[in-house]
Image (cartoon, rainbow, N blue to C red; front, side, top):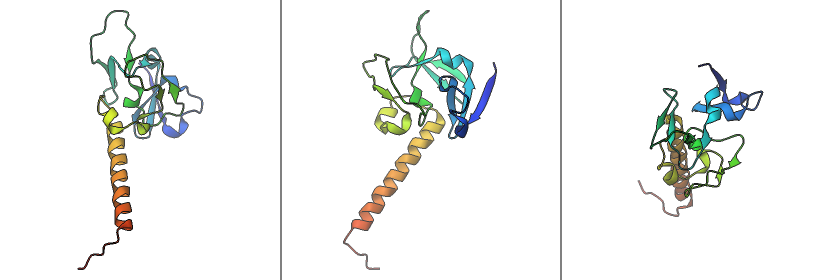
Length: 143
């Protein structure tokens, strides 16, 4: 199996996103077998980007399409798309994990770089909220 590694800044310059998968905060790879996988909001496989392997997360019959949840590996997609997965849990539009709630993302198996990015976003949000509360406070501390 031949894998080509692309830094994030090269995406969209001569490579097709349909064969790319994010494997790190700023790293994508092009992998030819990914073009046979489609997105689903109710996937039957997960991609372990650390080991570069697929794992079934529920029963798959011969002839079933292999699907994974794109935001489980993609933080922010350069080309968002309307999903046609027809799942009862369908999100309608896929743009990456960055645009989904932590509650929703907690329902899926996530790549470590997506978990790290979610925790960083939550930390930044918490700090921003704290700073807003402190700056709007009319109370002073007497020390």
